[in-house]
Length: 276
Image: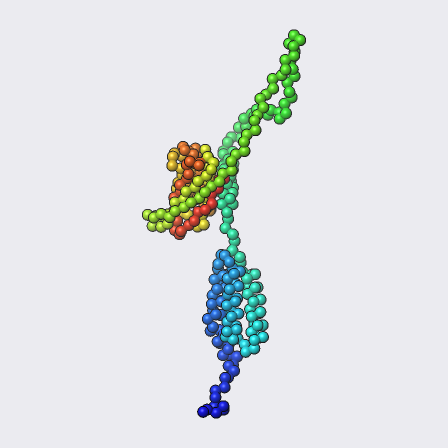
């Protein structure tokens, strides 16, 4: 039987060895990897920072970094404070613009182009050209006609017919569905068929469809005939497809949906449609 003096006595590893064990621990590098991914992520950055910090703190206690528990607790608090400061100075991702914001930007761009075109036409006109005369505006509150008297008889004045208040227009609602199809184009291997339905009839239309990725090309419309059509990817907004027409038979409405084919390099999802 071995004497007590011959039994191995657990030695206290030096600080350098403990630090090396901590630096080589899998939990440490797993936490660093999660935080590095959070810096480039677009969503849930706070959650990823928290998961990475927990992994690093686990590494502090599992290594362990220090022999005394209180020192490991202090190191964990310092690491938590450093991660909190890093999260505060890390640039946060911006929210993508909505379909209404993209449509407003397209409208502003179209108005700017129209204003530039009108200014160019105005400068090309001769200086002697005078604006056409305008008709005098009718008063808002005309004086009621006085009754006329014919041989002792008073004839009441003729009153204008009263206008009936028009009913409020219905609010247009759009339902967007899509299906994947096989593309024959090598430059845009993904083809998406989008169907847009509505509850209101549009004799003329200006429609913007927003997707979550850039669009290479697109075309579409109603199943009938459209006149004065403009379609394509919005200038400066590669994820917005615009379709306009001045008249269509049948027009876009509850009984006549719009079908749009979109080609892209990557899979896209189109879920928002709006008019402008």
